[in-house]
Length: 91
Image (cartoon, rainbow, N blue to C red; front, side, top):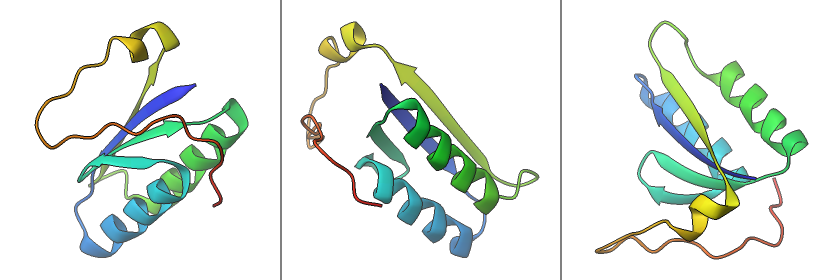
């Protein structure tokens, strides 16, 4: 299932850790936005790791689930190059 993960992290050190974790599971489409094509178990691992990294009093992380029909309708313009299907992520 495709998930769009976005974040706003207050502290630079946590920001780097959150970005690195998201890179382990997905593809960056904007500075703080990743597309993650993950099964439920891998998404649960990502979500658990992110929640261990953030300060819930200062930071925000959100994940939107995108259905396959909606993925086909996604549009982009400009420099945004949407990733193709991912065969394997190696965290």
